[in-house]
Image (tube, rainbow, N blue to C red; front, side):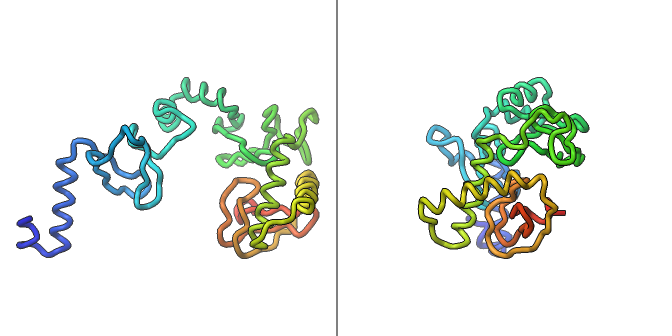
Length: 232
């Protein structure tokens, strides 16, 4: 290119990129890092997803972040706040709305005690009633769904194995899972005493944030591991 002969290398590269950006018939920009992506060179018949250099997985059909559980139309409705379609998606997915601020909440792990991240309203995910001291204020709902309790126990033991850097033998592992489930059941009645622990600790048991560097461990009855935000 003649640009490289009359411009400094950095300027020539920038100009070439801008020309490519202008001439592309199909393009998108990564919503995470704003990187220009020339879709003229992407075979959409082979895959509708690609990974940006920032490691964000993208959907090249609707030019947004990947949304494996939803169609492009459903994803757009969620992003745009289209109430009719959003409520239909919520019904299908089992989401609930906070009665205080109407924020949509999905429960994929943890107990039925929900603290809305938008307004901090505490309520029961099952019946949406305000949360009491230790249980749902109606007294009619269980604190834990059994499947979620088992999954949370398994997650605790997996984090323990990761810290040990070895698997726990099958019989002992089952005992660890049962102990973890018992501790989780006691969580709502625990007067937490949080201590900072370093290293990879799995995911926060309340908000699912990945604890790559450190987390807060309860050294009282329940032995919960959460992020700093949830602990405070």
